[in-house]
Length: 271
Image (tube, rainbow, N blue to C red; front, side, top):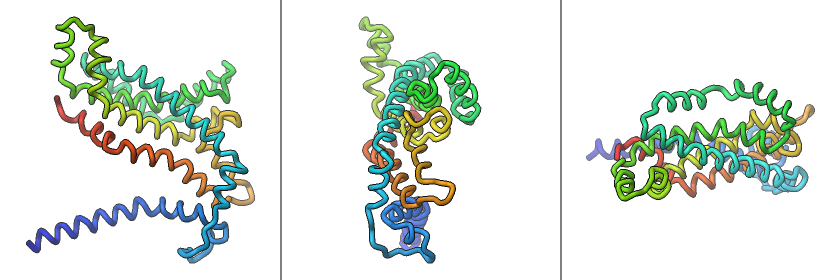
């Protein structure tokens, strides 16, 4: 009994320790977004302070963060939507026809550093006159979203019994009809997982937007630079902007948490 109680206590202590390490930077950022510049840089750190909304007023009033929010939303939703249209059939083909080499190739494309694609994208888009356009950002962000969707969904489709679609085809349905009418409805958790993760990766992407976007299509991660100047860094504005950027991703993850967990584990179990 004592040994069992000790294990429970040790387990919760370890969980609490990990939670503190992971959550401390977020809570520090959140509290700093309500501090003045003096309170942020004070040493020792001030745990008790008078909160202010000045940083958020500056972010959404003076810096027009709603415009950058719309740019990130347009790019992220479009890139993920186009990746779903291409990635779901590709993942199904990989799963059903055992195209493992293609699967590995797609994974390698995802693991390659994004900077290796940046120079070719820049040359192509500049010559086509597509710099500072949504098309350039959407296509570049598909390099992030498409491999994630294909890799997750190929494992998920592999776990769906083939007997289901075979029964539908015996009844006269084509493979395409079986895919849309049977396989996709059963793959809801996997689709939600792939969509959520790929959207978050696109939402947080900095490198492609830094090079391919300008003032018209600037996204949220790039807009944080508005609070950094040669002379000083507006830490309150940076913290408030970081909270504004993280909030949609956190909310999306919390809303679809159970589907994400189910989607990530379902593909590991054969039908």
